[in-house]
Length: 344
Image (tube, rainbow, N blue to C red):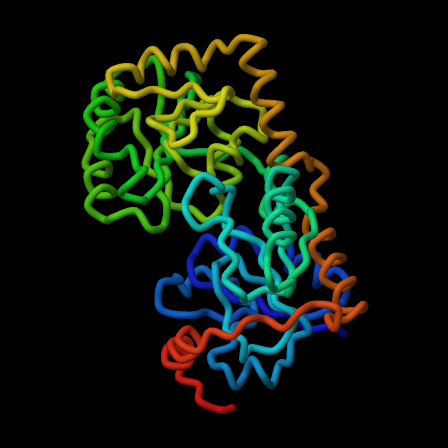
């Protein structure tokens, strides 16, 4: 039996890693979760999921591999370190940053694979491999049932899903316009916030009195995406997840406005952009399909299988052909402080 560890920091990890957990258990292997910090809602764990509470327990568990949606993982955690990413946020600073923590990067699609291969080719230290696998989270997307709510009506459904980053979020600029549009019965709105969204903006949207707005706070983003006809966002990786469903996207001041996006610069342009999105041209839909082919061409629901196979392949081959990871004494000390672990 093989043992695997999921190293998590935020709630978004659940939907990313559970398809991978299902694949591991299907093979008769075992998996445990380890939570760094205090930002994960522990009530979201299922009763049957094993959660380790200390580094000592992790070391005793002795995983052969550690899967990480976040940016870092301590070197004193045993096992091959595998980066599975927390989104498609290639436009944001840091997505391609090599933090010297990982042995294997499992990329989502050709755009990411090509960039990481370039980085490795130019890197002084060749301490990691890259394998294109697709993203485990997407395994559940295409078959997910559409989210339902009591006030749902047979009219177009708009999903508003802004990012949390102050530099990119559309929430402050679009709030008044969404408030106005929500009074019109021709559409209905679902609002889904990023886990890091400031509480003040979550509360402002919760205070909207229109029956046409429904705030979503559920675990499965896939079902929310399935429920929408159009998504409104900004510079968030959720727009790529939605594009995989072959549906139109409206963005507000996207940092790199690609051809498949209906990008607006002013809040007053939102209504017209939505109207355009609800009746997309063939050319617009073709652009969406071309974008998907670059970012995540896999629609077979087997990305978790490919991640696991890539991990086992590297383990079986060994990592002696890879350079040693560069040391980072300051980060190592901070991680030991955070996790209260001082054995060497």
